[in-house]
Image 1: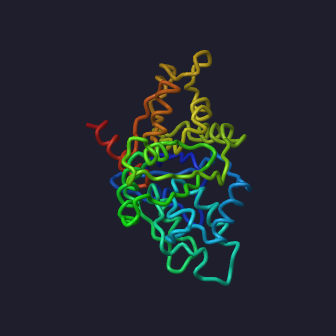
Image 2 (image 1 turned 30 degrees about the vertical axis):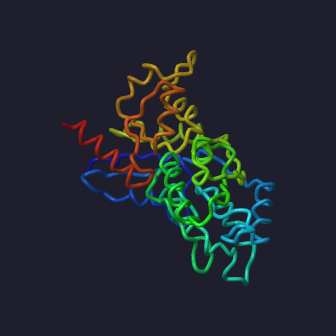
Image 3 (image 1 turned 45 degrees about the horizontal axis):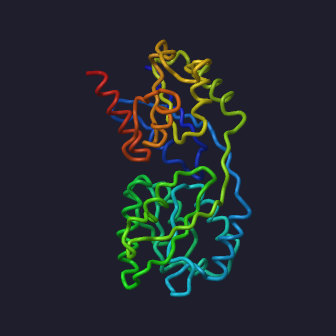
Length: 302
C-alpha cells in the first residue's frame, strides 16, 4: 500500500470539528491524503475594542432604528466572530440578545458564515455574502445589497466592521470611495477586536514534521495567511539568506508543493519572496483547496 500524502495545514485546528480535516481525511478521486495541523498564529482579544462593541450591544445602538449608530455589521475572519461570540455569551437569560435580528450581517466566505450562524440568538443572525469569497468581491455586493436594505434612506446608516490588527483596507476603500454617488456611499467604522502574532514555536514545529515526512513521495503545504510565510519558507530551506527571496534555491525539492487559500496570500509570496505557489484556491474553502490540488495533479500527470 502506497504511503499517504501529507497535507500540512498551516492553521489552528477548529473545534469541535474542522472541515479541512474532514476534506483531507477520506480517500477520493484516487488521492489519499493525511492532514497535519501546524498552528502559525496566536490570537488575543483586544479589551478596548471589545469594550466598544459591548457598549454598542448593551445600548442597542446596532439596529434599523433611525437613532441607531450602525445599521449592519461586517466580518471577514473567524477570529473576529470568535471575539464577537465571546461578548454575546456574556449575557444569559435573554434569548433575543444581542438584539440583532433585523440587521444585515455580511460575511466573506463559508467558514465565517458558519461561525456567524452559530452565534446564539433567536432567530439567528441574517448573514449575507457567503458566495463572494474575498473582500474585493464582497464590497460591491454590500453596496448593492445594503443600498436595497435601506432604500428608503438617502444616506445609508454606517456599518460596523470587526477586524484584527492585520487586515486589508479594500472594503472601507470601496464603500467610502469619494467617487460614489451620495446614495451609494456607506461609512464603515473598523473596531479592532483581536490581535495576531506568529507563534514562537511555529518554525520549529514545522521543521520537525518536515523531517518526519522527508521520505514520502509527495507533500502539500496549505498556507492560509501571509503571516508565517517567511518561517514556512525557512523551514523548507528555500529562502536565500542574502536576498531573503526564494529564487532558484528550492529547485532540488521536487516533491513539496504549496497551495494558498486565496489571492492575498499568493500575492504576498510572489511580491515579497519571489515565489509562485503551485495552487491558488478559487474559493477559500476546504473544497476549493482540494479542487485546486486535484486539478494541479491531474494536469501534471498528463
